Length: 256
Image (cartoon, rainbow, N blue to C red; front, side, top):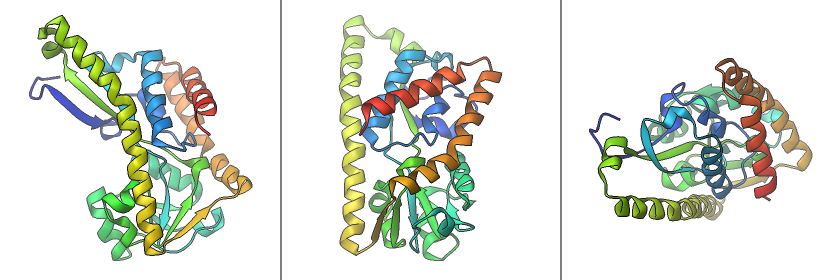
């Protein structure tokens, strides 16, 4: 906004409270892929055009793959997670709490040592972090808790004055390339999730798919977070009910 940088990438969660309508994307909506999350966040932006983003030119948005549970000992059901210290921050910390775990806040760069030394017993993050941050070396098990899976929304934006200074034909090129990168970025998130899973499978880590019934139990535990979001958004004069319904309906239709 100040023009120190012309274009920037970050995630909405780094400044919680500044983007109240966009925070719906970070909720544990039961994500199953980075593609679904990325397509949703762009459809959501086009639908609501939140005023909280009016001070910049939005080029495109994206969101990572399912945030699920990775632990040093196997977690087969909710009862196994009770009281476990799990690395999580922001909204994912609330997910951990609702599931019965004890969230511990660290940066991603600190997560490896926290797991290695036993400061935490697990972490909540996408598969990709098992390879990208090498967390797969210090956990032994992944619980595919897709019913309670969250994501994190990212933005690529341009300074508004810089955008307005560009000739119309150059603006068109930026818009076209940005639109192409929605699909490209979605594929990248899924590809690196796949690499993360392959990394731990080769290491012999245990992969635990939850049964339909158990997954539904996890989803039910985090449902109050969705209700809390709606209430908070409505109190700000935002369409909380409608926004949540849009997200859930979109995922129901657009992911397997």
